[in-house]
Length: 468
Image (cartoon, rainbow, N blue to C red; front, side, top):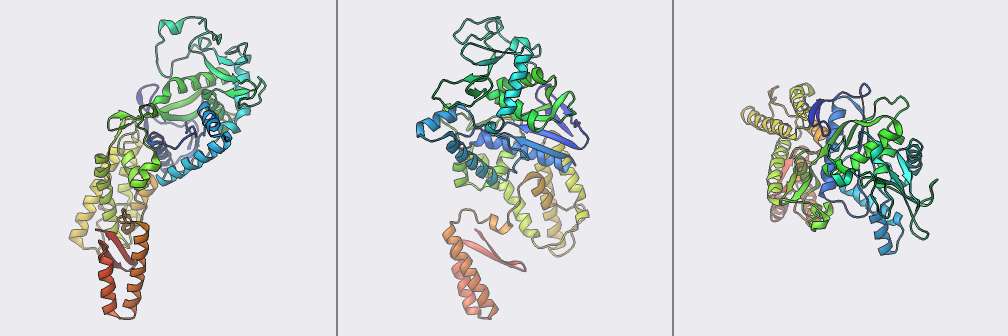
């Protein structure tokens, strides 16, 4: 298996730190608002990665944090006159609901910042003790970037002359302009947490380093704390750079053996940003499009590429997914032996083992769809499929997380709930009429059903319908 290491800037063979085990940590959301498509892209990428690693036989421990201490959260809670917990609980629940609609599996570990303060205090104290941090008069504690010879080795940034100056004469008494907060002291009356360093709040960069040490790093840790650290490309600097510095200087080991970063999400060519006013919330997209359609579309571009979200491409992507469901409908009820599917499964997994090459993986699926359809056309639906022309629907579902729906119900998108209920009732009445051999009533009910602009299929598994 190969992955592109965003620090070394090369595709590297993946070799886990421990045989058959993988530790994966991904930066999660700050829960003060609804999740947007940028959150979805990152969560989908690492959901896919964890699925591929498990398919390859690894025992994966996947952690993704919840940032529930943040100035934005506090600002919103203050504006609304509610507790920060009310804000964070609400948006954490909303985040989980949105991810579930996209078929994203929950991580094995989902630590919250508020539940990891002791680990943060320990890391701060270590950094103070070994001279990599300092406290200024108002109680704030900063990481001393000049004390770390490897600082900027993650992002490969070059500091300008202003950033290189040894001391910056400013009100916060920072030694260097690049120094970042580990602990922010808070005046009486403001929302704060008790600590050995006084009342205050932890710096944002600190929590991920502390959570990794607490939840993923074992006693026998070697050169690296975890196998893979992931997140959006916008986190490479300063967030991941600062995480790496904190861990390196407080523990004497590097934070991760491999770094992976997914590209930005653009909307019609413009980078998605709340400051630009074009943040596309997942909940709004789900009002128009099925979650599986969104999943398929967002995964259709390689994870390292910037993703340009537009409706024209989304609809074209849906047509590609439709082909899979048409074949699934065609194969519905046929028994298939698992040994007939080995070649397809191997080819699909091999594509994804190459740095999650989803384009090749989807091409493998497209080719197999065409081949199976051709075989069915020539052999007949009830004859045995050729051994080399077998697609494994269950494996696609497991590995890529789409194709899970009933193939008939999939094509019911766009029909409102009230109409679906009515159609179901008419189908049940028609089935009863057919059982009673009341064919006149059965035919009349069929005509009523078809008047909704749908088609119906009678199969040994039951009667199904879809939108025309």
